[in-house]
Length: 275
Image 1: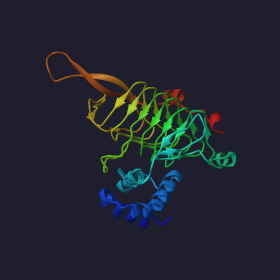
Image 2: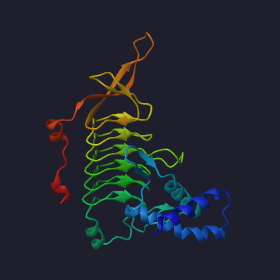
Image 3: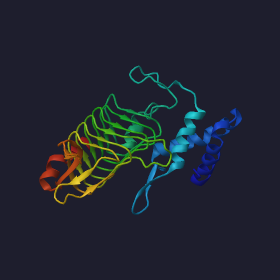
Image 4: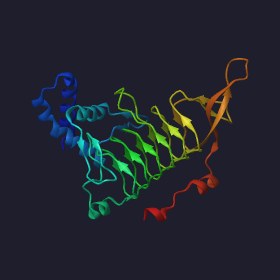
């Protein structure tokens, strides 16, 4: 696939998206299909690391949105457990045992992954939902009832625990998706949203909610930051006093320490289930 040509096609169609004729839609539909296939295979991604920051590849979001514009909803699977009426196929609909063997992942009944999401080898998908444009790195577990939103980027050897929500974003076009770096543990029922970046090795405790306006407070220094969880930080839910004199506390995410060997022992992944 010529990525540059695909990008030019997407950008041109996006500029005319409100007045695409049926013939133009028919002409660009194969290009959009190639783009979704590349997303599905992980050869293109909705965000990329430029050496210092993760940045959104906004043309990828345009590709996804154009697909919705140019596609009709229809029955996407005849299997009773996964039958859907949607504009996207499910990722595994046409897979056979050989294809699963090549991919090298485990998919438990109830796991739903839309076409256009990448899932790396040695990953384990419990009953969960992974949306279009998402990227799940090798050796990562997406646990029961967890969701990985559209275009979210999850690294390798992560554990996304039960009921966790990893927020997605298609619009605004330029917004960065949620980034979960390698070796991150996110505890049950936590929510990471609004383009927050959780850096390598961080441990997010159970029930932590972090959006771009959530204060992240280092208990040892008092430093308050937003939108980025530092490497190897151990984060738990907490509060801080509001500026009023009424003793009212508001929610905050608290960095209580740096992950140590004891922390790693509690949150380490079991390699047996990935063999």
